[in-house]
Length: 322
Image (cartoon, rainbow, N blue to C red):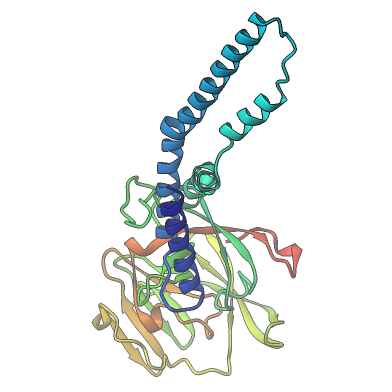
């Protein structure tokens, strides 16, 4: 078992190293599931097999010690040093390293697996596509059960949750490369016609209301941008627009349902197919989103982002957001 365990642990380390080095596309959900299963098997084996064996060995040792004590007592010797027995008992009960690194870690890994898969999952904002709502470096929490629970890895829905609403900020698996997670705002629901022309958003023929605010200063680029308060659904949120950039959507990908979209120098108009969503970033002129790579299938939805739990450069960022 020690050799087998060493091989298993080495395989996990090699996978992580290859992922970190860019040799493979890692899948953390799969890695965590495998770690939970493997350590769980060791944990069960420890409870049902290995620990009873060690306890039986201790019981055998104590029985031998009692027989030896009785023999000595029959000879009139009553003073017996039990220090050696205590040390031997501790050695026999001690969990070996290969169980300590497997069965010993199972409770922690199981808790992380359950929380990450079904309750909350942490993410770090890597880019400025959601400025001003989310800034680079924000550490956020994503609710995994609002839209219904899904089996990890398989992503099969097992419970019905609340329907996705326009204006929700969601994390999803990037359709062209599902191993990567993206975060954007839901703009169009299945069946909607979304138009973003001359930097004005229209949904089903109705212009989305927006109110001009004071200019936004982006510290990451040291630039001022026009800022607006936009209303989608029941909530308001802020967006920024770069007036220096043209409305033309340059070089969109050849995505699925590409025929549902019409591109022009003014922007794009798309009909959202059933079971899909149209996503955009709040930093409207600095966001690679559905305008460029298409619609997000419902199966790709990870969860609803709702809370900044830390930003090491700005503690004032901590709190909920819309």
